[in-house]
Image: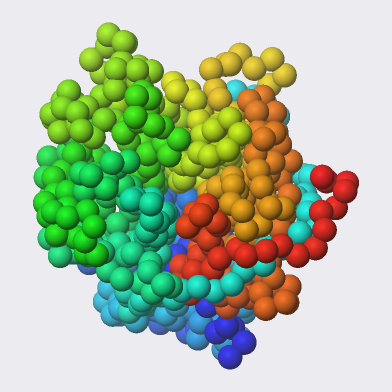
Length: 589
């Protein structure tokens, strides 16, 4: 059927309630369902509904402000219970059946969630009962008068460059889940060892693969090594990231991050007991018996563990500086990007935007050291806050003020600048230059805009900004161009010289491809973003058409010989950029 083509594979059950919630706020109260169902007030069912909501829904929603979807307070007073029940149970059926509300929702969002076949009737009613306890609250007031918030923070549109990336399919990931996305491939990198290059790619479901001759070979199945491993409710949870020590060829050491249930073990980074813990992120070190082995065999140890308020914005990246060589202060230092864990959305801003908390930061540690509080790793003596006397300061912090520092990379040519992409809330997606000790502003800033109380609303900075402590992005786009930035790389390969020096990135959700001139990225300057087209088999196309999906889940990786690879969770395919087509438009060059 027509609508089936646009089915969005989701990693969390309540993406559907996101759509439902938005519909309920925006549509009329007409329904073609009979109103023969009531909302339960049974305390036991409500308690069960809260648990189901936390497990399946809180990654996308809260009851204060919009997250991935709208805030859900008061949702059960906006429509009939019977309609809400059936929409949660099987939205595609209602859309294809012509239900007025459902069709209006589809037309607005151009996507819908799959049917919730895993939930029985009592479970859906329990969720509805819990939702009914969360009635509308007043939006947070602004802290100052700055005029109207900006409906369109960046009115200028991204221009097309005239160039399309020509890609070729090179591999298909194995299926690792029963429900879409069937392969949650997330990061690809190349290990250079002994004069040869080994490509690795991981699936959030718990498997680290080596990609050999365009075939996936299991290198490590973390599910067999970590009995408390979980990959629910989806999004970024599971096997989050991986990085090989720069001396892996000799020491056989590499690192991973993964999620475990709350309370699995005492956390090194925790907060007050009154605040809910949804899950824990764990950083582990693995030591192979034989670094040349095709599969992992050896030992592992835990370096650190952090509690998270929610299941979103966790540990998205761990990486080493590829430009550091023995003798450099940065050689062997591990960077870890940690999101705010949904703390800001949940109403705990004090957990981020702070040198005293790990959330919303990039930390930098010596994984082979031992001077941390738990003795499992070292704190580099040149970290920016090491000399601050306060015992509350987290000396591991290298930079802070992020919502979700999703990807970190270095330009391996030119001046070797460090680039950080930060996924925004409602308005702005950003690219930053990495700077030790910098405060990137999340909670008070999103991109080059001010937030005041309601983090959904962006305001222009005052003409005379009284707070000059924030570091602003070097490139940014707003949400009428895309929804979530997918960090990429400055191209330094040889295969496609036309791309040399361009930082190529994209949008996770829409799959749009962009670039900025890497050599021109500089503090205090906004470099224009230009769009790249896409060409497959000589035909111009889009990632949504290639994946036959409305949510692309776009990712980038650097493979052998510094060449650029692009892959998607939507279909689990890996593609290589082999050429470009077209001609750069002189007006933007």
